[in-house]
Image 1 (tube, rainbow, N blue to C red):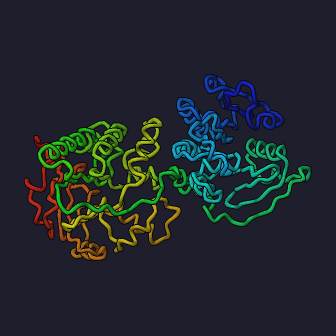
Image 2 (image 1 turned 180 degrees about the vertical axis):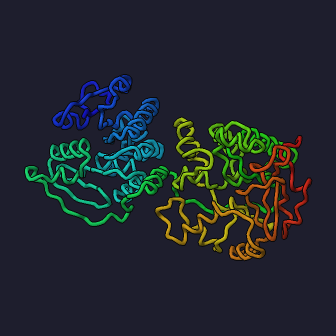
Image 3 (image 1 turned 45 degrees about the vertical axis):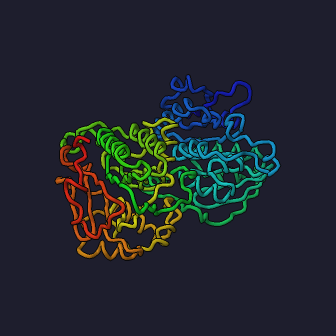
Length: 512
């Protein structure tokens, strides 16, 4: 059994290297030569966290660790958030008096968290874990980081004091650094409990259980482990209004699911820009109802050529949406869909690919992932206007008030069962609903809404409507039948019948 230690340190010894060598063969390798040493004899990999500070190295480490997981290798990540490596974590001189060792940088948090699900053990100082969790409070940072992984966390609080989270239970440990490192290395190589390896009679360590970890339950099943890996970087789960209120006048373009179709997005963009040119630009708004990303695999393209005969351009769609939203700040409103939610902590969709979130993450570079988080971190779940319109991704079937809506978190670990049910309803419930049900749901929101416009569904005709609801279709209709809506925000819409095909209901690919 060989341990492979990944590190590019030229002078200082890589973390855990001496302890690993004491237990068996150990190879220290740079990333450049790692492939030459990674073979069937490797049973454990130790990653020097300093490697994650460079974008090119992050990609190489991620690829190697995924290969290691397929080979059932155990992985330890030794966090290193030294501001010398991560310059954005350096505090200005005045801030150093606050007692904090690092500044906050959401992007660094995102980078670190994107590796946690690939690890069995994560070690680091208290400051390292604060950065990895994206919080100034250790318990909160540990909860947020732990939501990404089932790994054991070994946290050095100060000289001789550690906190260990393993199998869903927290322990305070008093031991020498040598004892802790030896225990971690032994547990990694042998697949044993870290606490049991530390608590040998000769170690003279003192372990005090703190009880079950309330931040995240231990993950026992494969399904639960997969859900844990879907958790988003903590920095994106920021408080934000869940309801976007539109103005009482102007023109509104409404689009639904794109699923990675760049041609459809560019047709929408041309229409939006034409509306801006024809009318007062500041009064033209565009609401996209979610599921813009994750396109068809080759099998779907063969089975459903009328809908799916295009290349998945989700990465390009993220870039283009980011550009449009930045250029027309405050007038392009991207509502959250189920597929975007997968990148923010929700379940990973598997409509086309085995794991669509992981696939898109692999296609995006660091800047692309940052754009995705920026676009959807504060995405509303609903939009409404004084004209009686309510816009949402799916067809909600759980009655709620505006106050209920604002209490929802995009982080599944923060919602109670009722809020979780509401979030699922807003993002994943399909239509059509029974007569009167949508109107009862609209009445629960208050302020007199009268018409729900939603996406998520597929209708070959290009749109469908019913009592209190309207669904224009882009993905789910043939190219010539795809529809979007162009609405007058100063006009009252009390029924879907007030929307006329060829007037408010517009064929997407008709010349502008």
